[in-house]
Image (cartoon, rainbow, N blue to C red; front, side, top):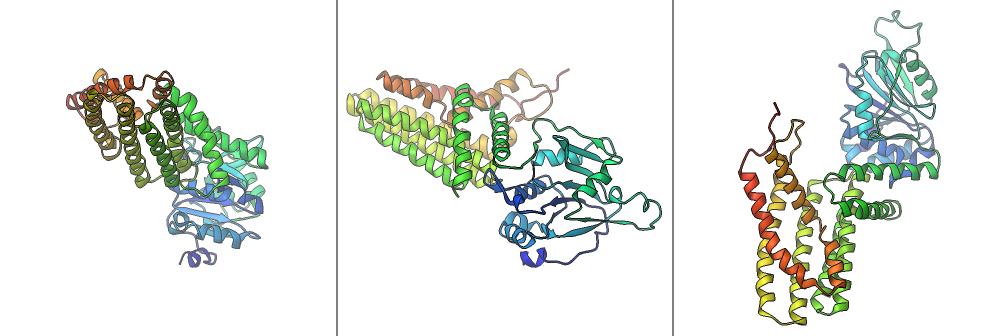
Length: 431
């Protein structure tokens, strides 16, 4: 069914104007991969994220190969992405044109399609046109303007130079902000630079919720690991989640052995799991595979690993120095952890609208509430792994058991009090 849709002949333009994007793919280099995703496929998925009504890939010599690629991606085939060698466009249709071998992101396309000038816009990178936004009439030759009663424009796969030249007659050049990538991909070096830029965006997007150590250590390592995963493996985000879970559970097993050496090894494995824990989300965003199920799996496995680590820690300490206090502390810690885990799942997964996102000025209570939520998320993201390693090396893991047992209840109590004290958003308009 998808192939039938892709193989339709040249169709008449739609009766009403629609936001259309034409992605030029005239040569084999358009299949070059950036972060594990072929360049043209990345542009298609970005266009779908940017909510274009009609997505058309223009290809000729590589058309069958492109049709196979698009038909093999359920996200593209279900959206009715077309592959053809040319399209006809009504004069009033709103059109975005992406040049061949150009990396774009959803933010790039949204920015280009919502330019406020009212004129056609063009984005140039290193002096070369990369992206244009216009109407069908802007592709018409000057001789046809005002002469044809119902003019239609034709855009073919080999019309890149002519199309950008036509748009440029009346276009305003548009600059892209740092969060809207637009890059020509000419060789492996520029592809690697594009991957680095995408990863820099990921680090920037997560900076507000990452702790200091996570931001400066975890993300630097996890982004390199994520780039290796998407470039050289076929692992999906949920596979990465399960691998990180296995590493964390192995750390819990070593902690339960109760010796100094296994305690150090167990905490190092847990730290490695904390770093891998950041890779699943990075792989998902780099490959357009974010999902609600993946988020739930991530939070659930985080809690499972935490539970195993706490149990392993308590068992190991009890084996080294049998003491009734260890059992009581372990029970107290598990109760506090269960409470924190339930709160994290509810407010980070079920009730995500409670996360402050308003542009209004936050009240003091709102700021406290948001910081507490960020702290809870950091706790569930295993930031405390950095504390366990030096405590294990200093042979003071029992200090963590005491602190965590008391702190888990204090943190949960603070969280509940703050969220019961006011509105869910926790924001008040300043004035």
